[in-house]
Length: 78
Length: 370
Image 1 (cartoon, chains in turn purple, yellow):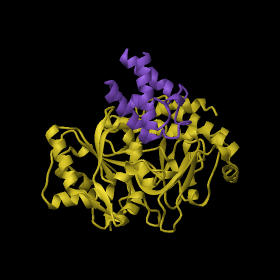
Image 2 (cartoon, each protein chain N blue to C red):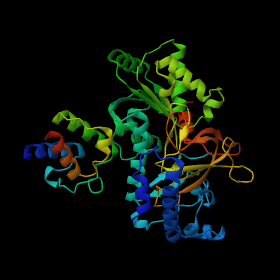
Image 3 (tube, helix red, strand yellow):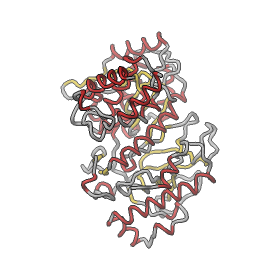
Image 4 (cartoon, rainbow over the protein chains, first blue to last red):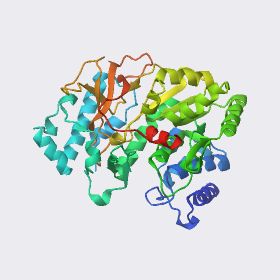
């Protein structure tokens, strides 16, 4: 699971253009300047591709912070 | 701020509650939100007091005072502290140069997005699709400055997979990239990809459908959907009705006519979107309702009668936009009985009232093309 988290942080930081060390469970559109509707879509697409998972539009709109994102991915991968 | 009645309303499916179930839920949420605006927005409180209206006594939605859409051009109404403003949204400018302006806090912005997304997914299905955008690459690019047009396009991309644009801006004018759209459509046909073609109504017809009709090009986009949004005013001179647009889209793209979807919405109730259903009507979601008013007396009208459309929804808590009388004319066809199966009042929008000077995004867009 640690590996999955690290991969997710890496993808997240590349798309949101933030340092990997600044990503926490509380990271959200409220405190990550680059996290808007467009980068959210880019993030979901990248996660689908890199982690070989499927995220439906309905699921994607509920992923409102990094904690929710990682929990969802771990659940999918598990 | 907590809004338990509103939260309860928003936990319901978009179109499954019948009138009986919805009435009380919606009334309670509207009452709660009206009280909130009454307490926190001084101009709204004064307006209610002049009308001798006390939110706590509201028992019928038709008795809820409405603000004319034009008021949002003259005043920036706030029901939150200024430091809580997260975003200010402006409509496209009118011929008198005054756009409507509304303010959102994070809570309202998030709530509006969720409501919008739920309606879109209900109509398009919970599936990521390839999008062909009838607009410029900049409209979906990473920019610091986001125009109203770009914002409208972006709001739909949450259900998009691969996204392409096929319009370029050259010397200030927009030009359709015919080779690109041809290649994208041919590819979608060969791969049997269920694409979504999305654009402003005027561009879709005048620069894509009309052009393709003239070249006799036809595609077979099985399962594809055409979504358009924006004003019809520019198309009125070309005598293009919604029926003609639908027919021509079916002819050119080879999609079913019920897969040509017209989205209606307005800035003053941002987050509320009314797509046409398979039967050609628009539906009030569980978190909204519509009243038709006589243009002269402003009294509520019966089902089937044409008049000014008043929209009620409690989803915005940062400004008192919960009851807005638009300058659009329409009629209610019925409640809960649409052949598409969705519950709620179902209605048609016929166009702007004759005196209205307001122009929609699509019309502004059209001028760029002219």
